[in-house]
Image (tube, rainbow, N blue to C red; front, side):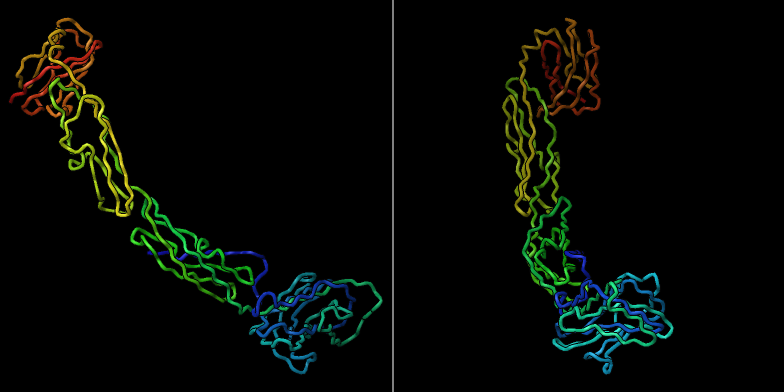
Length: 425
Protein backbone atom coordinates (compact mmCIF):
# COMPACT_ATOMS: atom_id res chain seq x y z
CA UNK A 1 0.00 0.00 0.00
CA UNK A 2 1.34 3.39 -0.94
CA UNK A 3 1.54 6.20 1.60
CA UNK A 4 0.43 9.77 0.98
CA UNK A 5 2.94 11.99 2.71
CA UNK A 6 2.22 15.63 3.51
CA UNK A 7 5.21 17.94 3.74
CA UNK A 8 4.73 21.46 5.16
CA UNK A 9 6.89 24.31 3.94
CA UNK A 10 7.12 27.53 5.97
CA UNK A 11 9.10 30.24 4.23
CA UNK A 12 7.72 33.10 6.27
CA UNK A 13 5.73 33.64 9.45
CA UNK A 14 3.14 35.86 7.74
CA UNK A 15 -0.24 34.10 7.62
CA UNK A 16 -1.84 33.72 4.20
CA UNK A 17 -5.01 35.88 4.18
CA UNK A 18 -4.77 37.47 0.74
CA UNK A 19 -7.41 36.50 -1.78
CA UNK A 20 -5.93 38.33 -4.70
CA UNK A 21 -2.52 37.59 -3.28
CA UNK A 22 -0.50 38.46 -0.21
CA UNK A 23 1.07 41.36 -2.06
CA UNK A 24 -2.34 43.04 -2.29
CA UNK A 25 -2.82 43.41 1.46
CA UNK A 26 -3.00 47.07 2.56
CA UNK A 27 -0.93 47.97 5.61
CA UNK A 28 -1.03 51.23 7.56
CA UNK A 29 2.21 51.49 9.53
CA UNK A 30 2.53 53.03 12.99
CA UNK A 31 2.08 56.82 12.95
CA UNK A 32 1.94 59.63 15.48
CA UNK A 33 -1.56 60.85 16.28
CA UNK A 34 -3.65 62.80 18.71
CA UNK A 35 -6.12 61.49 21.25
CA UNK A 36 -9.87 61.78 20.98
CA UNK A 37 -11.78 60.90 24.08
CA UNK A 38 -15.52 60.47 24.13
CA UNK A 39 -18.13 59.36 26.60
CA UNK A 40 -19.82 57.04 26.10
CA UNK A 41 -19.70 56.28 22.33
CA UNK A 42 -17.02 56.85 19.65
CA UNK A 43 -16.25 55.70 16.16
CA UNK A 44 -12.97 55.48 14.32
CA UNK A 45 -12.32 54.37 10.76
CA UNK A 46 -10.30 54.65 7.60
CA UNK A 47 -11.04 54.81 3.91
CA UNK A 48 -8.96 52.82 1.42
CA UNK A 49 -8.80 51.97 -2.25
CA UNK A 50 -9.12 48.26 -3.14
CA UNK A 51 -5.90 47.03 -4.71
CA UNK A 52 -7.52 44.01 -6.44
CA UNK A 53 -10.88 42.44 -7.20
CA UNK A 54 -11.68 39.80 -4.64
CA UNK A 55 -12.85 39.39 -1.07
CA UNK A 56 -11.74 41.03 2.16
CA UNK A 57 -11.49 38.36 4.81
CA UNK A 58 -10.44 40.33 7.87
CA UNK A 59 -9.03 43.59 9.20
CA UNK A 60 -6.34 43.87 11.86
CA UNK A 61 -6.34 47.01 14.07
CA UNK A 62 -3.67 48.18 16.46
CA UNK A 63 -5.22 50.49 19.06
CA UNK A 64 -2.61 51.91 21.41
CA UNK A 65 -3.53 53.37 24.78
CA UNK A 66 -7.15 52.45 24.26
CA UNK A 67 -9.45 51.85 27.20
CA UNK A 68 -11.91 49.32 25.82
CA UNK A 69 -14.57 47.17 27.41
CA UNK A 70 -17.58 45.40 25.88
CA UNK A 71 -18.95 44.82 22.36
CA UNK A 72 -17.58 46.81 19.42
CA UNK A 73 -18.89 46.65 15.87
CA UNK A 74 -16.69 46.63 12.77
CA UNK A 75 -18.61 47.78 9.69
CA UNK A 76 -17.43 48.17 6.10
CA UNK A 77 -19.02 50.55 3.57
CA UNK A 78 -18.84 51.16 -0.15
CA UNK A 79 -17.52 54.69 -0.56
CA UNK A 80 -16.56 57.10 2.19
CA UNK A 81 -19.78 57.48 4.13
CA UNK A 82 -22.13 55.36 6.18
CA UNK A 83 -24.95 55.33 3.63
CA UNK A 84 -23.98 52.06 1.94
CA UNK A 85 -23.00 49.37 4.48
CA UNK A 86 -21.77 46.11 2.95
CA UNK A 87 -21.17 43.93 5.98
CA UNK A 88 -20.50 44.09 9.71
CA UNK A 89 -19.39 41.94 12.63
CA UNK A 90 -19.21 42.38 16.39
CA UNK A 91 -16.12 41.70 18.47
CA UNK A 92 -16.00 41.75 22.26
CA UNK A 93 -12.99 43.60 23.65
CA UNK A 94 -11.70 43.80 27.17
CA UNK A 95 -9.31 46.20 28.84
CA UNK A 96 -6.55 43.60 28.72
CA UNK A 97 -6.51 43.84 24.90
CA UNK A 98 -5.40 47.45 24.96
CA UNK A 99 -2.14 48.08 23.12
CA UNK A 100 -2.47 44.82 21.14
CA UNK A 101 -3.22 43.88 17.55
CA UNK A 102 -6.84 42.75 17.15
CA UNK A 103 -7.83 40.76 14.07
CA UNK A 104 -11.51 41.08 13.22
CA UNK A 105 -12.78 38.48 10.73
CA UNK A 106 -16.02 38.96 8.81
CA UNK A 107 -18.47 36.02 8.92
CA UNK A 108 -18.65 36.12 5.13
CA UNK A 109 -15.75 37.59 3.11
CA UNK A 110 -16.65 41.06 1.79
CA UNK A 111 -16.43 41.44 -2.03
CA UNK A 112 -14.57 44.49 -3.37
CA UNK A 113 -13.62 45.73 -6.83
CA UNK A 114 -10.15 46.91 -7.69
CA UNK A 115 -9.86 50.73 -7.77
CA UNK A 116 -13.05 51.39 -5.81
CA UNK A 117 -12.97 53.24 -2.46
CA UNK A 118 -14.28 51.61 0.70
CA UNK A 119 -14.38 52.60 4.37
CA UNK A 120 -14.20 50.53 7.53
CA UNK A 121 -15.53 51.93 10.80
CA UNK A 122 -15.14 50.64 14.36
CA UNK A 123 -17.44 51.86 17.11
CA UNK A 124 -18.44 50.85 20.61
CA UNK A 125 -21.92 49.48 21.17
CA UNK A 126 -24.19 51.18 23.70
CA UNK A 127 -23.15 48.72 26.41
CA UNK A 128 -19.42 49.29 25.83
CA UNK A 129 -16.96 52.01 26.63
CA UNK A 130 -14.00 53.12 24.56
CA UNK A 131 -11.30 55.72 24.22
CA UNK A 132 -9.82 55.39 20.73
CA UNK A 133 -6.54 56.91 19.61
CA UNK A 134 -7.01 58.57 16.22
CA UNK A 135 -4.90 59.93 13.41
CA UNK A 136 -5.28 63.70 13.04
CA UNK A 137 -4.19 63.68 9.40
CA UNK A 138 -4.27 61.44 6.36
CA UNK A 139 -1.43 58.94 6.53
CA UNK A 140 -2.66 56.46 3.94
CA UNK A 141 -2.35 57.59 0.33
CA UNK A 142 -5.78 57.43 -1.28
CA UNK A 143 -7.78 57.52 1.93
CA UNK A 144 -8.61 59.60 4.99
CA UNK A 145 -9.11 58.90 8.67
CA UNK A 146 -12.68 59.45 9.86
CA UNK A 147 -14.32 60.01 13.20
CA UNK A 148 -17.99 60.03 14.05
CA UNK A 149 -18.23 61.14 17.63
CA UNK A 150 -21.27 61.15 19.87
CA UNK A 151 -21.14 62.68 23.34
CA UNK A 152 -18.57 64.94 24.93
CA UNK A 153 -15.52 65.46 22.72
CA UNK A 154 -12.10 65.96 24.24
CA UNK A 155 -9.72 66.88 21.44
CA UNK A 156 -6.44 68.75 21.71
CA UNK A 157 -4.72 69.11 18.32
CA UNK A 158 -1.67 70.70 19.92
CA UNK A 159 -1.07 67.93 22.41
CA UNK A 160 1.75 65.50 21.98
CA UNK A 161 0.79 62.19 20.43
CA UNK A 162 -0.03 59.65 23.10
CA UNK A 163 -0.57 56.55 21.00
CA UNK A 164 -0.47 54.86 17.63
CA UNK A 165 -3.04 53.64 15.14
CA UNK A 166 -2.42 51.07 12.40
CA UNK A 167 -4.43 48.60 10.37
CA UNK A 168 -4.04 45.79 7.82
CA UNK A 169 -6.64 44.88 5.18
CA UNK A 170 -6.42 41.10 4.59
CA UNK A 171 -7.68 39.76 1.27
CA UNK A 172 -8.88 36.19 0.96
CA UNK A 173 -6.27 34.24 -1.00
CA UNK A 174 -7.40 33.03 -4.42
CA UNK A 175 -4.01 32.75 -6.07
CA UNK A 176 -3.08 29.13 -6.66
CA UNK A 177 0.37 27.89 -5.69
CA UNK A 178 2.98 27.24 -8.35
CA UNK A 179 3.69 23.50 -8.70
CA UNK A 180 7.13 22.59 -10.05
CA UNK A 181 8.12 18.91 -10.36
CA UNK A 182 11.34 17.10 -11.10
CA UNK A 183 11.89 13.42 -11.91
CA UNK A 184 13.85 11.40 -9.34
CA UNK A 185 15.25 7.91 -8.80
CA UNK A 186 14.44 6.01 -5.59
CA UNK A 187 16.62 3.07 -4.46
CA UNK A 188 15.04 0.16 -2.61
CA UNK A 189 16.58 -0.80 0.75
CA UNK A 190 17.43 -4.26 2.08
CA UNK A 191 13.74 -4.83 2.92
CA UNK A 192 12.69 -4.07 -0.65
CA UNK A 193 11.04 -0.75 0.23
CA UNK A 194 11.73 2.97 -0.10
CA UNK A 195 9.97 6.01 1.43
CA UNK A 196 11.02 9.57 0.65
CA UNK A 197 9.89 13.14 1.20
CA UNK A 198 7.76 14.78 -1.52
CA UNK A 199 10.12 17.75 -1.28
CA UNK A 200 12.57 15.74 -3.42
CA UNK A 201 10.07 16.03 -6.25
CA UNK A 202 8.45 19.41 -5.53
CA UNK A 203 11.20 21.51 -3.98
CA UNK A 204 10.78 24.13 -6.71
CA UNK A 205 7.12 24.76 -5.82
CA UNK A 206 5.99 28.00 -4.17
CA UNK A 207 3.03 30.08 -3.00
CA UNK A 208 2.55 33.82 -2.54
CA UNK A 209 1.71 33.23 1.14
CA UNK A 210 4.97 31.39 1.74
CA UNK A 211 3.09 28.56 3.48
CA UNK A 212 2.12 25.44 1.53
CA UNK A 213 2.11 21.66 1.70
CA UNK A 214 3.08 18.91 -0.76
CA UNK A 215 1.35 15.54 -1.15
CA UNK A 216 1.95 12.53 -3.41
CA UNK A 217 2.66 8.80 -3.36
CA UNK A 218 5.98 8.43 -1.54
CA UNK A 219 6.15 4.71 -0.63
CA UNK A 220 7.36 2.13 -3.15
CA UNK A 221 8.38 -1.55 -3.12
CA UNK A 222 9.88 -4.24 -5.36
CA UNK A 223 6.66 -4.46 -7.36
CA UNK A 224 7.21 -0.84 -8.48
CA UNK A 225 10.67 -1.30 -10.04
CA UNK A 226 10.86 0.87 -13.14
CA UNK A 227 9.19 4.16 -14.13
CA UNK A 228 6.18 5.28 -12.07
CA UNK A 229 4.19 8.38 -13.16
CA UNK A 230 2.92 10.44 -10.20
CA UNK A 231 0.92 13.61 -9.54
CA UNK A 232 2.24 16.08 -6.97
CA UNK A 233 -0.38 18.34 -5.35
CA UNK A 234 0.57 21.69 -3.80
CA UNK A 235 -1.95 23.17 -1.31
CA UNK A 236 -1.80 26.55 0.40
CA UNK A 237 -3.46 27.46 3.68
CA UNK A 238 -6.45 29.06 1.92
CA UNK A 239 -7.46 25.89 0.06
CA UNK A 240 -5.95 26.80 -3.31
CA UNK A 241 -4.08 24.00 -5.05
CA UNK A 242 -2.00 23.19 -8.11
CA UNK A 243 -0.56 19.98 -9.53
CA UNK A 244 2.35 18.81 -11.66
CA UNK A 245 3.56 15.46 -13.01
CA UNK A 246 6.80 13.59 -12.40
CA UNK A 247 8.36 10.18 -12.98
CA UNK A 248 9.64 8.17 -9.98
CA UNK A 249 12.12 5.58 -11.21
CA UNK A 250 12.37 2.82 -8.60
CA UNK A 251 15.63 0.86 -8.78
CA UNK A 252 17.09 -2.15 -7.01
CA UNK A 253 20.87 -1.75 -6.75
CA UNK A 254 21.51 -4.22 -3.91
CA UNK A 255 23.29 -7.47 -4.81
CA UNK A 256 22.01 -10.82 -3.51
CA UNK A 257 23.48 -11.98 -0.20
CA UNK A 258 25.41 -15.24 -0.63
CA UNK A 259 26.96 -17.01 2.39
CA UNK A 260 29.58 -19.69 1.80
CA UNK A 261 30.70 -22.41 4.24
CA UNK A 262 33.92 -21.89 6.15
CA UNK A 263 37.38 -22.86 4.95
CA UNK A 264 38.31 -26.53 5.33
CA UNK A 265 41.43 -28.70 5.41
CA UNK A 266 41.67 -32.19 3.93
CA UNK A 267 44.56 -34.67 3.71
CA UNK A 268 45.07 -37.32 1.02
CA UNK A 269 47.56 -40.12 0.45
CA UNK A 270 49.82 -39.33 -2.46
CA UNK A 271 48.10 -40.65 -5.54
CA UNK A 272 44.62 -40.08 -4.08
CA UNK A 273 42.07 -37.65 -5.51
CA UNK A 274 39.91 -34.94 -3.92
CA UNK A 275 36.72 -34.49 -5.95
CA UNK A 276 34.92 -31.15 -5.39
CA UNK A 277 31.34 -31.44 -4.14
CA UNK A 278 28.31 -29.57 -5.49
CA UNK A 279 27.86 -26.91 -2.81
CA UNK A 280 24.83 -25.35 -4.54
CA UNK A 281 22.54 -28.37 -4.96
CA UNK A 282 23.42 -29.71 -1.52
CA UNK A 283 22.32 -26.49 0.17
CA UNK A 284 25.69 -25.80 1.77
CA UNK A 285 25.52 -22.23 0.39
CA UNK A 286 22.68 -19.90 1.50
CA UNK A 287 21.32 -17.23 -0.86
CA UNK A 288 18.77 -14.42 -0.39
CA UNK A 289 17.77 -11.15 -2.08
CA UNK A 290 15.69 -8.12 -1.12
CA UNK A 291 13.42 -8.46 -4.18
CA UNK A 292 14.04 -11.61 -6.22
CA UNK A 293 12.64 -14.87 -4.86
CA UNK A 294 14.47 -16.79 -7.59
CA UNK A 295 18.10 -16.04 -8.37
CA UNK A 296 19.60 -16.41 -11.83
CA UNK A 297 22.94 -17.55 -13.28
CA UNK A 298 23.98 -19.43 -10.14
CA UNK A 299 27.49 -20.79 -10.66
CA UNK A 300 30.20 -22.61 -8.74
CA UNK A 301 33.84 -22.23 -9.76
CA UNK A 302 35.49 -24.68 -10.09
CA UNK A 303 32.42 -26.73 -11.02
CA UNK A 304 31.31 -29.74 -8.99
CA UNK A 305 33.29 -32.89 -9.88
CA UNK A 306 36.56 -31.04 -10.38
CA UNK A 307 39.64 -32.84 -9.03
CA UNK A 308 41.41 -30.39 -6.73
CA UNK A 309 45.18 -30.14 -6.67
CA UNK A 310 47.21 -30.27 -3.46
CA UNK A 311 47.53 -26.85 -1.86
CA UNK A 312 45.08 -23.97 -1.42
CA UNK A 313 42.01 -24.10 -3.69
CA UNK A 314 39.59 -21.13 -3.76
CA UNK A 315 35.95 -22.00 -4.41
CA UNK A 316 33.65 -19.16 -5.60
CA UNK A 317 29.85 -19.08 -5.72
CA UNK A 318 27.98 -16.34 -7.60
CA UNK A 319 24.35 -15.49 -8.50
CA UNK A 320 22.34 -12.62 -10.02
CA UNK A 321 18.98 -11.14 -9.09
CA UNK A 322 16.31 -10.08 -11.56
CA UNK A 323 17.77 -6.56 -11.73
CA UNK A 324 21.18 -7.85 -12.83
CA UNK A 325 22.96 -7.28 -9.51
CA UNK A 326 25.57 -9.98 -8.86
CA UNK A 327 26.54 -11.35 -5.46
CA UNK A 328 29.53 -13.60 -4.72
CA UNK A 329 31.22 -15.43 -1.88
CA UNK A 330 34.26 -17.67 -1.65
CA UNK A 331 36.01 -20.12 0.66
CA UNK A 332 39.17 -22.22 0.65
CA UNK A 333 39.78 -25.93 0.61
CA UNK A 334 43.36 -26.81 1.58
CA UNK A 335 44.37 -30.21 0.20
CA UNK A 336 47.34 -31.84 1.95
CA UNK A 337 49.11 -35.11 1.02
CA UNK A 338 50.97 -37.81 2.95
CA UNK A 339 52.95 -40.91 1.98
CA UNK A 340 52.21 -44.30 3.51
CA UNK A 341 55.94 -44.59 4.15
CA UNK A 342 55.65 -41.83 6.76
CA UNK A 343 53.60 -44.20 8.91
CA UNK A 344 56.22 -46.97 8.95
CA UNK A 345 58.81 -44.62 10.44
CA UNK A 346 56.61 -43.29 13.18
CA UNK A 347 56.12 -46.32 15.33
CA UNK A 348 52.36 -45.77 15.33
CA UNK A 349 50.05 -48.71 14.75
CA UNK A 350 46.28 -48.76 14.12
CA UNK A 351 44.48 -52.08 14.79
CA UNK A 352 42.40 -54.05 14.13
CA UNK A 353 42.12 -53.19 10.47
CA UNK A 354 39.52 -53.94 9.15
CA UNK A 355 37.57 -52.89 12.26
CA UNK A 356 33.92 -52.95 13.31
CA UNK A 357 33.01 -50.65 16.25
CA UNK A 358 36.39 -49.86 17.79
CA UNK A 359 39.93 -49.27 16.64
CA UNK A 360 43.05 -48.80 18.79
CA UNK A 361 45.87 -46.32 18.18
CA UNK A 362 49.16 -47.67 19.59
CA UNK A 363 51.99 -45.17 20.21
CA UNK A 364 55.06 -47.43 20.57
CA UNK A 365 57.59 -44.57 20.56
CA UNK A 366 55.62 -42.42 23.06
CA UNK A 367 55.42 -39.56 20.58
CA UNK A 368 53.67 -36.35 21.66
CA UNK A 369 50.37 -36.72 19.79
CA UNK A 370 47.74 -33.98 19.27
CA UNK A 371 44.69 -35.39 17.46
CA UNK A 372 43.36 -38.14 15.21
CA UNK A 373 41.02 -37.33 12.30
CA UNK A 374 39.09 -39.76 10.10
CA UNK A 375 38.21 -38.77 6.48
CA UNK A 376 36.20 -40.54 3.81
CA UNK A 377 37.52 -41.02 0.26
CA UNK A 378 36.09 -37.63 -0.83
CA UNK A 379 38.13 -35.86 1.85
CA UNK A 380 35.13 -35.16 4.10
CA UNK A 381 36.00 -35.03 7.79
CA UNK A 382 34.04 -37.72 9.69
CA UNK A 383 35.53 -37.76 13.17
CA UNK A 384 38.15 -35.89 15.24
CA UNK A 385 39.54 -37.06 18.63
CA UNK A 386 42.06 -35.27 20.83
CA UNK A 387 45.18 -37.33 21.66
CA UNK A 388 47.07 -34.96 23.98
CA UNK A 389 46.63 -37.28 26.98
CA UNK A 390 47.56 -40.41 25.01
CA UNK A 391 50.82 -42.04 26.07
CA UNK A 392 50.77 -45.52 24.57
CA UNK A 393 47.21 -46.44 23.44
CA UNK A 394 43.77 -44.89 22.83
CA UNK A 395 40.59 -46.31 21.32
CA UNK A 396 38.37 -44.62 18.72
CA UNK A 397 34.61 -45.32 18.56
CA UNK A 398 33.57 -46.26 14.97
CA UNK A 399 30.06 -47.45 15.81
CA UNK A 400 28.33 -44.47 14.20
CA UNK A 401 30.26 -44.73 10.92
CA UNK A 402 29.04 -46.47 7.77
CA UNK A 403 31.07 -49.36 6.39
CA UNK A 404 33.65 -48.35 3.79
CA UNK A 405 37.21 -47.19 3.24
CA UNK A 406 38.55 -44.27 5.31
CA UNK A 407 41.85 -42.58 6.12
CA UNK A 408 43.02 -41.93 9.67
CA UNK A 409 45.31 -38.86 9.98
CA UNK A 410 47.31 -38.60 13.22
CA UNK A 411 48.97 -35.28 14.05
CA UNK A 412 51.90 -34.89 16.43
CA UNK A 413 54.26 -32.08 17.31
CA UNK A 414 56.71 -33.61 14.82
CA UNK A 415 54.35 -33.99 11.86
CA UNK A 416 51.34 -35.94 10.68
CA UNK A 417 50.82 -39.56 9.60
CA UNK A 418 48.12 -41.41 7.66
CA UNK A 419 46.70 -44.92 7.61
CA UNK A 420 43.99 -46.42 5.43
CA UNK A 421 41.19 -47.95 7.52
CA UNK A 422 38.49 -50.38 6.44
CA UNK A 423 35.25 -50.11 8.42
CA UNK A 424 33.10 -53.25 8.35
CA UNK A 425 29.63 -53.96 9.65
